[in-house]
Length: 220
Image (cartoon, rainbow, N blue to C red; front, side, top):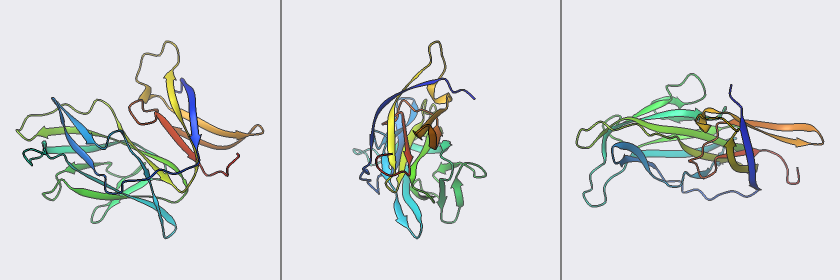
């Protein structure tokens, strides 16, 4: 596994972000390729504590032109690229759709004659979780095949009020590949002891190329 990543720590925060709970991912087109039109920049969403779990409603739909009222697309596959261990996205009538292993990890728009769908993402423990997706195999409203999204769109999901660390990344000297193909490991250490570890692919197109969360008290 490739691990040649240099980390430039920007900062940390103990606060939580305000989520727009109804802010669906809207799939449209940008020239000859499929694109997630909004929300931009990629969101940081706060999960809700419900019956011992942390949950988040994530919606998706086609982008509709404000002038014509017509959708940009007639078809798009939402393909998962990465998901944090322990995070599961489910849908009523479909069961678990997105997860680390054993799920289909894609969803077609439209399904059941509608492109508008909602999923409940759930975790058991506080932390920062990542869901990375792309639009692929899209067909424009007029019938033209569109190129796949050339990058990965990241949704950060914050469960509870964890210690958050985020920053920028740069590849090791001489590395010519895509940063997303690397794996970044962040460790929280105290007195020479490792208290917690988190691993994820760095995503230079996200609001933060990396953000991790540790369920640790302030001052750690």
